[in-house]
Length: 299
Image (spheres, rainbow, N blue to C red):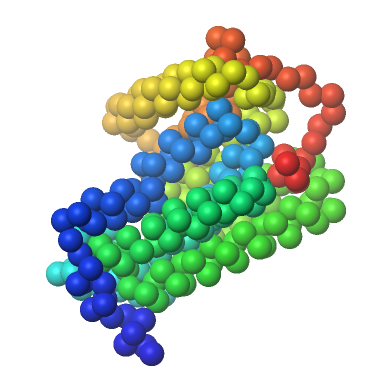
């Protein structure tokens, strides 16, 4: 059984010139470069509440994944079998692609409550998970572990979200608890914690601040949504380039810079860009009558 979990002998014969580009496409859907665009675009042009919850979920499950990788230090398959060389020297168990694929796509299906959404989620998640085996980046044990942790993340988050104490508490308590989780992970990290831990924490602070202080609706004409997504994507690219230039020119302690960079990205996504899109008439401003807990809403 153990040999079966670690062997890729059954996958290698499936490799072909026709299938490889499809597997590379699926695996791209699990990388940071796609996720960092997908989540903001959904926030601006689809549903801010759904994508706020999804962003928090992705941040927490990514933190868990990184902590467990460094804790278990389970090696990836032999590099001679690998067709994806972006993984560097990171460990294999649990697979981050599998874990985040389950979280993103099945959470969206859960929010939408539509049969077609479950079918799309299953196809995309299975495609991403299988692509990691096909490209030799993970073995069966890695993707099974990542998938199960993704499911566990969804279940725990949904139970917490429906807990009356959580739903009735102020957003400040939500933020405090989330940051406490990050601090606990940082202090207990098996070895040296990666620099993206303060990046994720800073981003969550910025997003939750923006969510509370700028309310808008994407219930507008389709062309307005598309225009908002396109303008937002272009502005996000410019932001990344600007932050890179600023980081190169501003000598700041690396971890502090990562936290500030994450904060800037979070504020941009949830506050500055929506404000600009509302001013441009592409989104609709909404007046909040009373404060609500941002992660507790069911819809």
